[in-house]
Length: 597
Ligand code: GDP
Ligand code: MG
Image (cartoon, rainbow, N blue to C red; front, side):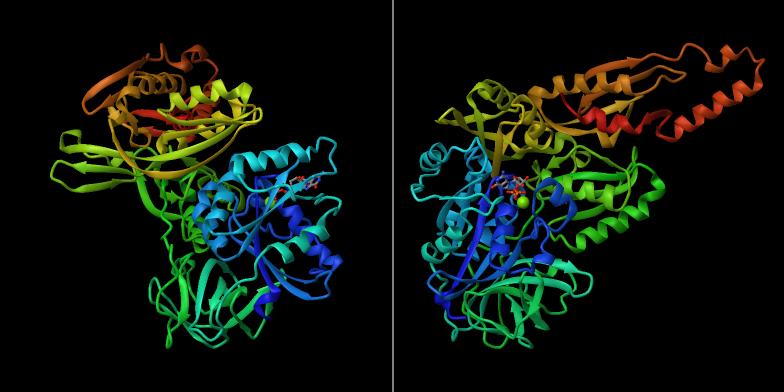
C-alpha cells in the first residue's frame, strides 16, 4: 500500500470509557470480521484481562476502509495496555503510530489515566482526535466534557466527535476523521530496514510472535534480521498482519504494522522498543528511546501446601515464557519453606500474575509483603540493591539507604479531597500541586513508592467511594531514614515478616504488627513473647500468655473416643500451621499481619 493510504492509530481511554467497544464497532463497520465470527471485545483476549478490563499485550488489527471519497485505506489500530505499570510498553506502541483517538465517556469526563496516556501520545507527536462516547445515555453532557478536555489537557475539543459505541452512532464520522485528520506515516522503502519491536508474546504453535512497525525499508520472508540491542540474528519464517486473525503476507513496507516469527525461543530474547534491521545491510543507528524493562516491585510467592512447590515452579516457568518483564528466583524462608522471590513492573502486574497462578494453575499462594528495590550504600563504599528486606545487612555496616519515589496524579471530586490529602500525608507524601477542573480537584504528590505498593490504591478507592482516579510514574531515588524492622516470635526472627520502614513510623507499624500477631497466633503451653525490633533494639512487644490447662483435661479421661476426636481435630488444625521454632504460626497470620489498616 502506498503511504498516503495508510493511517496508524491507537485509542487512549480510561478504563470503562469504551475503548474496546469502540474498537469492536470499527471492526464491525468495516466488515473486517464476518458477522458470524464477531464476538464481544475482539481485542481483549485473556479472561482475567477481560474481567478486569485491562489489556497487557499490545493487540493490533488491520482494517480496510473504503472512505466516502471512494478511496481505499488501510487502517492499523494498536490497542495499548491501559495501566500505569506498562507505561514504557504504552510509550513504544504510541511511537509506532501517528495519531490517537482520545475516547472520553461523556457522562463522566477526564480521568487520571486518560491524562497520563494522552501525555504519552502528545510526547509521541500524535495528532489527537477527541471522541465523546456514550452519547446514548441520558447523563451525557458533551459540552461540559469537551470544555474539560480543553481545560485539563489543553487540546481543541470543539470538533470532538460524538459517538455511541453501543448503538454505532458516529462510527462513520470517526473513520472519516481518521482519514482526514491523522497524517499518513512517513518512511523510505529504499533505505536500509529499520523496524520497531512493539511487543512480543509466546504462541504454543508458532513460538515467539513479534509485533513490528516498519519505519524504513522492506521486510520479507526469509530475510536474516538482527535485533540491534543484543545483536542476535534470526531468519524470518513467517510474516503477516492481524485482521484480527493472523494472515500471512509477502512483505511489510514502510508505515506498515504486522508480525514476524523467526524461530525465537524465548520472549526474553525480544526486547520491546528494540530496532530490527537486516543483518547484511543494517541501518546506521537504532531508534531512540529504548529502555530495558526492569521489575520494580518484588514479593515472595509460596505455596500454601508445600507439596505444590513443583507445580508452582511449573506455573511460574510457563507464565515467564510470555512475560519478559516478570522475574523469579527460588527463595527459601524459614517460616514459609520453599517458594519464589518474584519481580514485577508494578502492583497490578503482581496481582495479574498471582491471580493467574491461583486460577489457571489452581495453586493457593501466600504472598509476602511487596517491597521495592532499595539502594543500600555500605560504609565500605559499595552499593547493594536490596530486593528483599530479609537480606538487609547489619545496620552498623550501612552508611545510608535510598528509596524510589514517584510522582502521583490523583483526580478526585471536591468532597473527598480532604481524605485524599490526609491519605497522601500519612504515606509520607509531599504535595506538589493542587488545581481544579470544574468540581474535581487534581492533586500531584511526590510519594515513596514503598508506601504506595502496600495498599494505597485500595485505601484511595475506599476513602473516595471509588470516585478517585490515580496514576503515577517513578521519578528517582532519594535518601531517607529507612531501617529494617524484624519480627521475633518466641525470640526467633521470622524472616517472612521483616520489612523496611521509615524510622519515624517504625514504632507505630511495629505496635500494629505485634498486636495483630498476638490475635492471630494461637496460645501454646508456654508464654510467647512477640516483638518488633530494629537492629538489636525492641520497639514494640506483646506477650501471648500460656494456655491454662490441657484442653483434653475437660474430657475427664473417661470418654476415650471424645478425647481421640479432640486430638485428631487438633492435628488437622496443625496442618494449616507452620511450625516455627517451638511455635505454630497459622498461614493467614502472614497475610493478615502485613496488611495495615
Ligand atoms: P474499556 O475499558 O475502555 O475497554 O471499556 P469497554 O469498551 O469495555 O466498555 C465499558 C462498558 O461501557 C461496557 O459495559 C460497555 O458495554 C459500555 N459502553 C461502551 N460504550 C458505550 C456506549 O456508547 N454507550 C453505552 N450505553 N455503553 C457503552
Ligand atoms: Mg477494554
